[in-house]
Image (cartoon, rainbow, N blue to C red; front, side, top):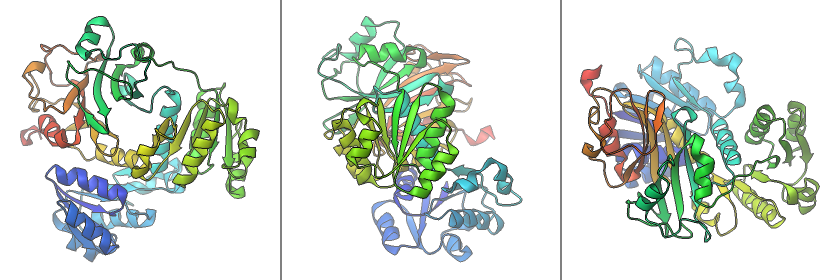
Length: 459
């Protein structure tokens, strides 16, 4: 597949790294020659310097025979015009645009994205993606990472193994015997900064970060077995009243009448907008770093603090201060992935990487076959892929024991009709129409795609 990626920032870079690593023909376009040169030197991609929306630049990038264009520059308007030029001049059939402005996302204006007007096939909103990720973190306070699959019937959870975990130093195959009715499986383990797919004989140790795939109905029991207790989050403080903070507060008002939310926002204009928009949320104007203001927001008795300003350092420092003040759980939005390893030592319970959520959302619309969802783990270390099995897929009709999965791949769940099987047997047959959820290390994603891919005969 020939792909043009417009924008060589962190989002464009990660997408290019994924797609080029899977033997796609990728060209990166950016105004900054240094970013283009870096992408061309480090990744197996071609580079073109210039405005992504200019027809001559797109033609130089190979738009005449392009299958997909991804417009992920920092400008909404450039992304929109790029998709228009891609359709009108070059007839590119698949166009994805990243749009930040909430005005462009207003439901009453969605008609402008029709093919005969402003032809964008898929719109990705980083703010909406981040807000949804934040809500999932708040809903699972015992986890540092979480994502839903199979229409909400399967849950991926990341948890840290504590010293008092009841199943320390227990081989995973023994856990299966001890809890034979538990619909959960360990699909990934990070130990000493290395992520791997565990073998049945592997054991868990204190300090391990593990990824669990669990049937939604068994989440509470799974967390209890691994020494975690879930507590309902009713008192929440949000630092930052921008698009993300506002979206989270709105969702909390709609989802639960018991949740008491407070927002601290430094900009008077945005604080007034938040106060006018929200009904039950208390809005405080001031510096979220202020110990006095945090005390006024009763941070010491809060169940959770969510720091979602546009400054990483502010988010991290506010989260640390809130934790020291007695806040039960702190979540920090962090754009710079190099800061993520600091979260644990600083006592920050969970982090949200906007670029990772955006990359996951974009990749969901790029994969071959009937891929329904993709979630990126860590700094693009692994992916959890949900896909429907088609009749021409190589795994269709095979028993699980006969499928040659790479070592870095584990099945996190199989859905037949409405039934979700978290630990299928070796003799379970994968059939057309089944839905699979696979944990795959980045190096093995290409092979997973091959196993799921539709042959040309299907069309």
